[in-house]
Amino acid sequence: MTAGVAPAQPTVIGPTMLVQGEVYASEGIHVRGRLEGTLHVNGGRLVIEEGGSVAAMVRAACVVVHGLLLGDTVASSSLTVCRVQFRAEAFNFTNSPMFGMPNQSFGSAAFGTITSAQNTPRQLQLALRLFF
Figure 1 (cartoon, rainbow, N blue to C red):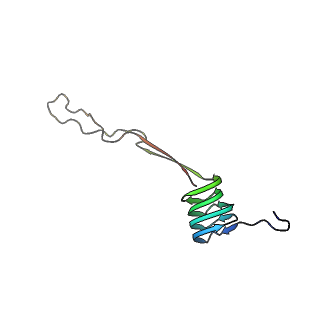
Figure 2 (figure 1 turned 30 degrees about the vertical axis):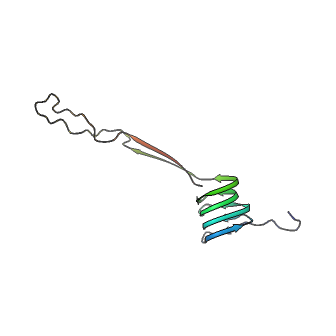
Figure 3 (figure 1 turned 120 degrees about the vertical axis):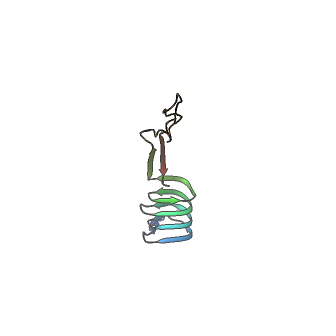
């Protein structure tokens, strides 16, 4: 840092702003609004704040994600993800059978017996989603 020169402040993309296209920056960028396209941050860090979204190909030394990041990202130093979502879905959770029709062959030894179920067994699906 040079004496008498204030450190560079990051560029702020405000919550009501939409920036589209190729963006090149030599300082940091804080995104509170939307950025779409290509983003190159040389020497600074990209911070996507809560409520901010970046749908771009990103190249930066340091990326911190509190909002939404969609696209290819190259972080040469660090990538910090601040939001995780866990989801669980269950189908036929109690594993209750739905029996098929009984055998209708009158006079058969198997008359009236049920030999099949019409539904699928219990299924569980778990998902972990990282917002980065």
